[in-house]
Length: 175
Length: 175
DNA sequence: GGTGAAAGGTCATTAAG
DNA sequence: CTTAATGACCTTTCACC
Image (cartoon, rainbow over all chains, first blue to last red; front, top):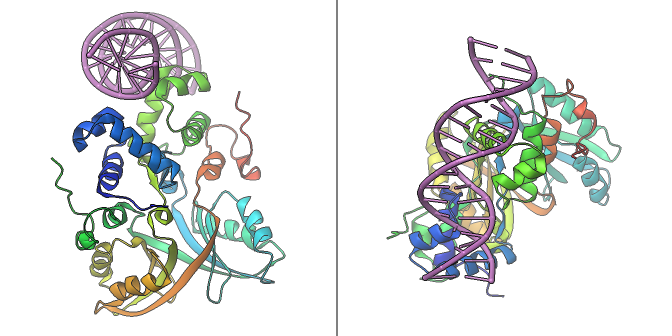
């Protein structure tokens, strides 16, 4: 499995991220390669799972869920994670769940309409027999919103070893 | 500010999320509305910030960063958050940073190529004078990958008050 | 490289708040 | 009266063969 991405992949991803509505032809022009190349790269990136999809990015805050919190859960027994995950899956305000190392068992990212509403969401979470304890941390400010582009730029495995680490989000000197 | 989303918005978002490559015309057909309506809704959703963009979703694991961790940072002084955020912003492996309540000051989501590589990333983070302590939690398994669609389905503010709360991910009885 | 088919823009009309 | 939806026109651009 060759995996990873080379420089063209990286440039393509960043181009698509910057201007998502441009088509394959336009990409080819800006990258200075044949359109077939772009299409082949895109297909490969998607089949390899690098590009999961092009779904619209929704901002929970813009639809009324302005409060974000991280909840660490302790589960009654070491097993039973899946059952709890199924329970959490039924709660729309639960955006993400990981099993984790450390004192907790599960880490959840949740949202709510307000701090008062947060209580309701948490009650919905902890109202489940297998959950022993919940520790909630409220996210006050999003200092760095979720991003992957700098990582994509730094992940290039086609060119030089990877001095790209030096230029987190640097311009790729396109055309 | 009317904000929120109504049922058509919600259906549109979920349609686009399911099949991102379909165009405006196709959306109009499937939703049973005019093309201009879809276009107007899309424009409004984007200008309101509900839809942040259509950028490609990248899977960090697929480009070699299979290890995810959450790092809680304590900062020397209560202020100086911004300076630390700027420092963290320069590290590509830092995907997300929030200021938080509780004992810590900042919560970061980071990725690395391996557990050994995680050490390198953490060293890069804590090698900054204002950071007093770092507590790292490794994400073992992604029980629920990041999702917002159930929330979008539950957030409808156009129909009934919001008994949608009752049906977390319920079918919206589309056509 | 050609061709059928969309996208995107504008507009007048109509309906509903 | 303001806001939104509709169907129609148009030109440009793309995707597929």
